[in-house]
Image (cartoon, rainbow, N blue to C red; front, side, top):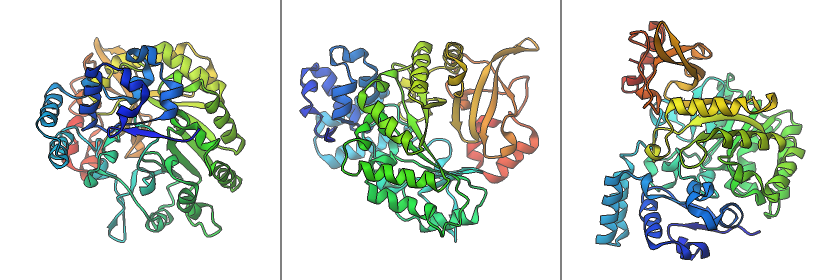
Length: 445
């Protein structure tokens, strides 16, 4: 199969779209003027049930829906479109709305950008001691866009919102000076949208004999297996990629695909199964992750089925995330107590080999906060929480407590339990305040 993509500019040429009601097509057009829209022929032809598109999880995962925008934002954009087709004017209206959608959550722009020789590495994030994220400029797109995507700001053309880096020289120098970093995560966008020749240039410094970094694991955050498994089957450079992956693993470097699967419907095609097998034959490890999102996968039986199918394909269930506080969060958000119930019930219905999965987890400003459960302590109903990862490594794996709130959907809506002023000990709050801006402290005080 040859790759063909559709965006807001040509979605009307998709044969199945012509059969949709005019109102649905209008809604897709208006929402896609603000939030990015891209879909490809594999998703359209092999994953979506067009006879039941309104309830189809992959349609909801890839095609914009009216409710993804708040009513005032939808109406403002619709009015602008009705008034004029001028691209500059429509861009001004859409950019104004985009800036109101918290485009870079969790302090990514303020707190995660490292320095080398007094130069900010805008294509790198170093939030956790052992792990650095790298945003190669050539990989800042995807084969298709998820409607819930927390990195939607990478794709809307506002340069100051993007993370990207063309050259690796400064990044390599930074990693040479920071031997505590053992894991490098290629992210985006999707690094697997790059050609072999481009990707190889980025990875070569870490597999050369001159490598002086301490990188022991290369991770690739990708949805290529869900959205374009033909990448490793029929693409012109498929064999080159597989050979490169084999070279990486033969060097003793752990190569891990952090594969995004949001619904079991993505796991059934023959192309996917063959692609996974080819990757596994090169020594690639495949770990799976997804947020729990309303309208797509907010039922425990969906998650149990997905984890079992992943395990049967020799993939390792890794994370269940909470939808981040950006973009269309209001539409896709699941209350924290319900997310935990979904996780718990799904976890109860799979065998031990699937219980490698962790969650539900919020990737917020101080780190990855896991909801361990709901309990009652001293006659107070509480959320039991812990850090899976933290800016301060000493926070990791130490339980703490928040007041139970059935309406809470994110960390910043939680309050400390037991009349405490802080979620952490005083010295920990002092550490955070001294190292990061006070504006990011409101969820900890």
